[in-house]
Image (cartoon, rainbow, N blue to C red):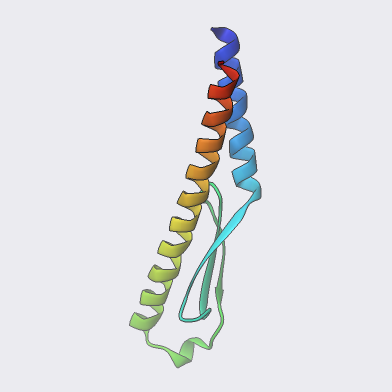
Length: 95
């Protein structure tokens, strides 16, 4: 039983490390705004690829919101995939 718990803890830590090393991006406005997150949904960077004077405050807020939402969705998808992979490895080890 303790071996299983130790194995589960190790798999969880390996998954976290894998996700920390990966990046996902969300963009809006055909690349005007690009937000990068880690696979664990941690903020990494934001790129604004236009002059701020070329857009209104509301346009910028909308683009940031869309880009951030897209980045979060990509990170969530990656996170779920890694979780399923780790769970599958654990279940295969129980046979």
